[in-house]
Image 1 (cartoon, rainbow, N blue to C red):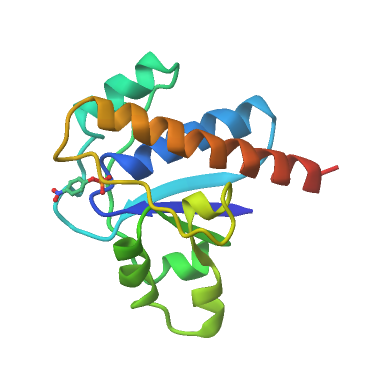
Image 2 (image 1 turned 90 degrees about the vertical axis):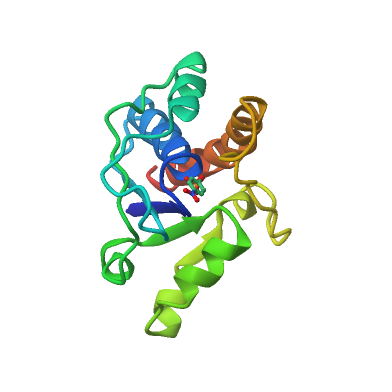
Length: 155
Ligand code: 4NP
């Protein structure tokens, strides 16, 4: 199983989801590959935003090793599931899909915890520090649901 999480810049929301999933899968000994990417090219090669790193650190996760990259069409071949943070990411990723199979891999990350509600993770980039804790809390519930789903699958 390979999972990709996607946002716009790959420096705030998706690296936070990436770090959370990586740590929880590792704690549960689940052999699941996780990566993250951005639909935009503004921050390629950069570490996560300082506020994202600090928020994750305060919550017990280190994401300082991550580096931003851009989503590419070959990610449809390399990943089983592609989770996006908001509707705009969804449209950008779906716009690159080559087939119904590609499209079927894509869903909003918060639909894991809130099926069918199409809730978005708001972009915290232009806001204050509180936006990052809000993102952390929104992500956490879907992370726990996904870990439970994949943990039970493996038994
Ligand atoms: P992210 O946040 O998509 O959660 O990584 C953003 C980071 C940077 C920009 C937009 C969103 N930007 O426009 O540079």
